[in-house]
Length: 273
Length: 287
Image (cartoon, rainbow over all chains, first blue to last red; front, top):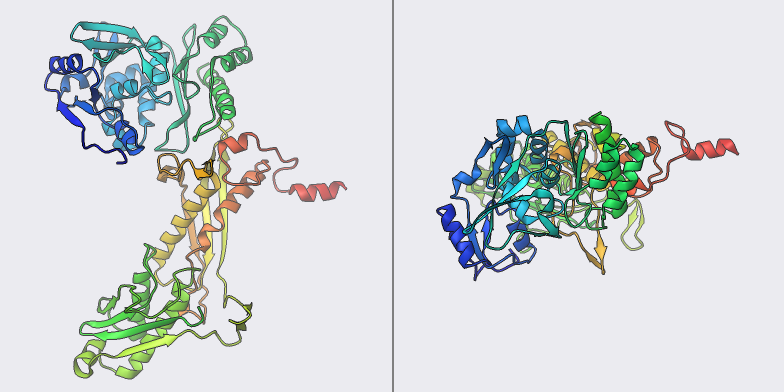
């Protein structure tokens, strides 16, 4: 690793209350789950923190359950767990599809939903799914629990409303009663980071979200309104191009992202008709 | 390189190959040991290979230019036959036990009829050539501008393969790399430096990016090489990119550089004529 870990400290959480107490007393602590993003950062010479809290013993946070009509996905559920879960497969197949395309199998075995949310990369593959599914993020601290709509969770590039003393403990997804569609456009067929990533729900007012086309995942509310009120697909596409702000980077170009984002919306519309 | 030398010596267990060429995963050690074992008529297990340390091995020339098998392997075949003449019907190990170490060495000489001057560097630089033909079948995704090679056929003629399974592996590996070069391997330069020099952002093909391949090795034994072999090292990486680009042109895209990434194809002009007739021929016909 390019970053020295000599002065790093690692604590291990035995209970959720214990973990929340650590975050209250030392809010600079970085919670760890699969470490699949932390190790990349360290290898790039970055320093995500010096004090770490290992959450992996908190098995209860790995559960995927149904509660009050919601699909409740524990923050420590891995991408492999999501693919294997009958609940996720029947209620949120677009999340299964997204999980199948994250990194490779090793990453899918280690990487977690909570980690994908906390890392907050605009290229995170599960994020458009949660945006289109109207999910809520469950945050816990020693002061209690609160729920934040996923679409207002991020405030900017890798920035969110999560306070340093809060832990993401679950994502709650209400029932999705319309056709779901997901497509990732990566740099190659596997082991790829998204250049554009799309999730959509074909409800009477459709819900569309895109990743890798702005500083955060983007819910396309204006495009949705055009489509939901009977506007033409091409009018919606014009609106879409105003809603996203892609850039040139190592993986792709702004032009490509704009063009392919529009094509993905067209494909979604045709396939879910 | 014309002075390249290779040696062979007896040991208590058999023989040891003395060459300067390096094994970098291509199977050189296996292939050279096969040539020596067959040249001497002894089991493969009795052949060992000295580390390519120049205090121990002669100057065999560099491990380049697809020459190791044909040139250095050829010298070793001669060494093996000469050693067999010297030791008669006995085994190298028995000879070693009775007479002590026997060492033979061969130096490269240009094949008869080939003209080359080391002074002026004029003449036939290469004694022979290997040949290859690649066919790429591709699909273009109109939504993402991604190209997927759906099937790849590589036909290669490099004399007679010494180790067919290894040669096939070299051809498959090189073809996969060639297709990566054609479609994926985009070097991003910033301020004079490569900005994507990590495997996380420099994109090479995974198994899922690599199509099913048909590899055909046309056997055509070459009299100037060991057991009829020529070289295969570099050849199979040469054809895939032109084959992929020609497939894209056949599909109507005026591709003129690689890698033909989706970003590049987005702004690639369409050819005026497609499906068979080249645009040049079309233009000629129009004049």
